[in-house]
Length: 468
Image (cartoon, rainbow, N blue to C red; front, top):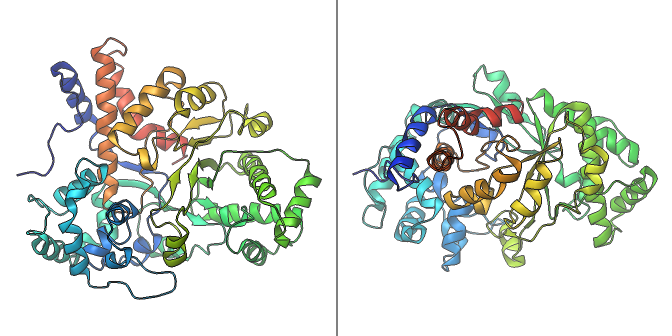
């Protein structure tokens, strides 16, 4: 018996459901454009087998282990590495049994839909995961992972991925991307420029990161001019490895456009480690405007992922490091925060600035009106905590009336969990087809226009927005 219902996420009402089915049938097999994500380029470079089911599905996926942690299960028992190298569970089967025993915790969540899709469509499984089936699951998936057709490159091709972007720090040497390029494999894996570690004065090792960027580029990054030139050089280096975008994960969407002398003085304080919290925020804000100006010069699409309180738990960060499921959404202002940047470059149609939010209250009040006016702005899809059927539907309902569809950029999966990529795109395609079907059934969209729009939402908008 299939794990997934064939009509999942479609309207219940008959005519709308039939329209959604027809729209989906036309786009379900389109190639995947994955323009922003966090899969490991080393997978594609080395093309080694994934170690075991637990390391594929549980240990690296913060969606999975944060839910288990919320029920009192220790991250160490799930094999999550400790920052100090201390002991954690390494027995994959034991981790998998613990996961299976608690799989009921994911009922009704997007995670269960993604996981069940992977179990059914990637590994051909038709039985439910629980403690009784845990060992069977583990043995079956482990046997699959030992086969050549389950290596990363083979899965990439099987998933029909046309292009995927990974995300690397500004100082990354991009060795894995170089290895991919030299391998002769034709899969398109590009990088994206993530300069947070050399833009945020409060980032761990900021001054050391800036010095390394100077060594990499031959620029004197103790000076403001040399620092900016080093960014330009690194962006050009990333473009050599296919980069079409930069990505900026900031606590807020604040931007500033300071006089260059003031920006230089603030940079000097940042290097000395003497910035106040307020000054660090001002520097980050100004650097978003500098990055936008650089995008006008080199053509990189600019993404701002704002509004996450990163690493909310100090004890978890101390023991396990960053990005361990304790990033929490915060309220975010866009109208006031973006105004300095938009006054500087907002009317430039040759700039693409894609905005993401974790604050859904801003959709109809701020983001859609902004994107519906400024030529440079586009809205990224429902992100992270809202990457769900409900979140995707709310996004469409709250933004389409003001920004339309063509001031959005389709879908991106933004994931570290490789096997969830086709699952996530399938959810987005089904939700969008359901939404379009409702518009057709209620007389707000022509039935003849809907197929073209469904194609754009699934494929065309992302490909065009990210120059892929």
